[in-house]
Length: 225
Image (cartoon, rainbow, N blue to C red; front, side, top):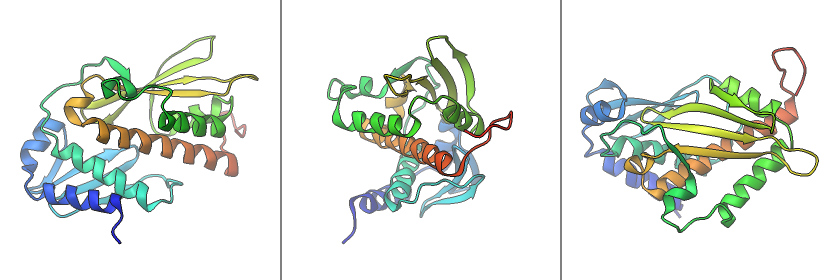
């Protein structure tokens, strides 16, 4: 039986058959390499999107995420980006995910709490492992504070910048991460699509964090995290 995430991917592929790739490339900052082919970068991966498929064609580092559902969901979200009718520039003002839900979600919702708990279990009260991931993927460090709050900037997609806000844990409270999305995010995605994107980011970060713990990652000064 075809799974839900497979059905979504097939639905997106069907919509792509009617897509004007030249128009999408112009509005959404995509690299067009053929009449019906664009490239879209996501972290250190490059996906090729055509009228028939969404395919991973380049990957600079190995992602420790071994999940068919994850791959289908991510490809569907990237397809929805290409299909967006948005014609905007980023607002460069940011909000947490639940802000975009129109009151349906709260930060304490079970799904968001589960993502935060998994992140906290992975990183504990350690900042260096998270910083190492930010450095690996070219995040732009903005500022830090003595209170253990660190902010990074990243262009997640061509028209969708985000901010990472990392709260360093201590003996009593574990670390916490907020991902803030540009306030024009809902002009690109609907809330469900943005939520899938949010979950994909957290899944990747947790997998990278767990991989660090199992293999050991060296910092610039040579110490092992």
